[in-house]
Image: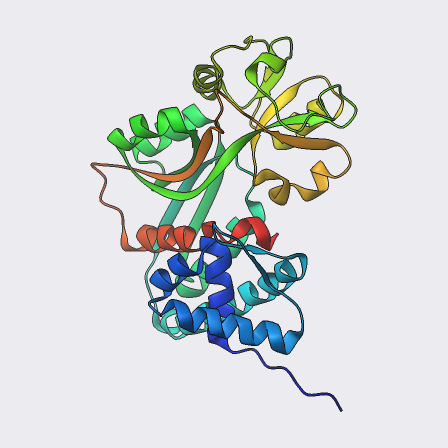
Length: 311
């Protein structure tokens, strides 16, 4: 019989932490352990498995194809352990009430369901409502108090403005990409600049987002085929080569089935650099959140950066 290979809970947390942060140094800070503890533990597991989990580069660590599969298993382990640790609290938790979240479309449905399930285990008597809204509707709803907090994607040039009005927490950061049809003329490009997009029609989520995007591009036309926050409708237009769209470098993970064999996302380069987008939570500065809403937001923050590779 072959030697059995065991993985400890600590090793699972280390793998999730490094995948989350991209570097052993930052993962060690988050987990309050030494860098050597993580490095040695991961190397030992790789030796036991006979496969490499991370590529080590000058800038950090990147999951191998095998590592992505191990990561998924480790994420399940960590999530389940966290749920077990929270379970005794849920047995005696009698808090009641309602927590509502307004969300501008981002396609994180599997991730949201995971967070909601963990929240329910801790607060079984609290009603949880998560609604997808147009961006302007979401802003109105959280300002009026109809929703406890909002979740949205903002571009780098509007993030500072939002942060002056709301307590914004950065959940994830990613580069902007352009979604094009695999049957279109841009498919074979390695990256795209504003000059290459001048004659193209766009599908965008809303006019506010569009204005911020035009400010970043500076040199392109402003022809919009339609506005929609429905990702299926947007993908349909792009896959048929009727328009191009704005995504992030994380979106193919969130929409694997929709992107398969129909759409490719290409890096956007503006004046020699890649513009960023920010996935954020938004709470009005004059708002005092309930304990249950705060608990939900903390879960959202904790698992947001795990989601791209977990779907």
